[in-house]
Each structure stands twice: as structure tokens, then as C-alpha cells.
Length: 113
Image 1 (spheres, rainbow, N blue to C red):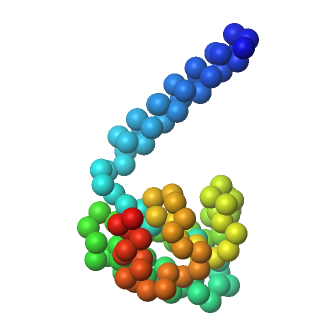
Image 2 (image 1 turned 180 degrees about the vertical axis):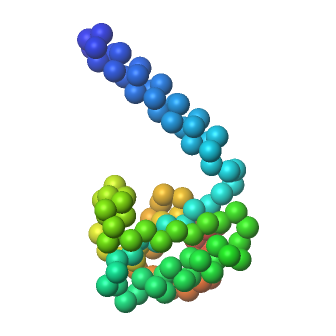
Image 3 (image 1 turned 90 degrees about the horizontal axis):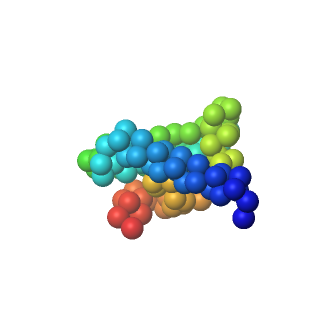
């Protein structure tokens, strides 16, 4: 391994550590984030968003966000997450449902796993 490769690995590791510390400092502890990827023409997306917002409003420490793939930022985040269909529901950056959750209770149960 060359010195340049070794230096690049060290820089990457330090940057990853710094980003994690910064994320931990900014993010409140025990906060669960539900992200619902939607599109403007999807007939099932409003139901998925309503479920996520209902769970968030009834559960302390849970936030729900709608991310529209119809916006450049939403499209980019969907590409980053590998979203292929809408609605897709992520809980703490992990795919929980492709399609609307079958019920609010199913979404609540997914929060605990």
C-alpha cells in the first residue's frame, strides 16, 4: 500500500468519525425518524403519510417526514436510499415498508423492531 493510499484511508476514517460526532451532537437522543417517500401522482402515498404522522403525533420521540420524489432534493435522497417504488417508508434510514403500511399498528410495531 502506498503512502498516498494509507493517508487517504486515515483521512476518510477521521472524516467519518467527525461526521458521526457532529451528527450525534445535533441529533437529540432517542429520536426516531420516519421518512415516507412519495410522488405527486401516487394514489396510495397520502395514506402512508397520514399513518406516519398519526404515529408520530401519538408517540414521544418520533418524527415523520414526507419526502417527495417530485422535488430535486427528494429525488436525490430517493436515489441515495435506492427507492424504486412509492410509497416507501424508512425508519431510521432502514427500509420498513415498500407500499403503504398495512395498518397504523403495523407501523407502530415496526418502530419497536
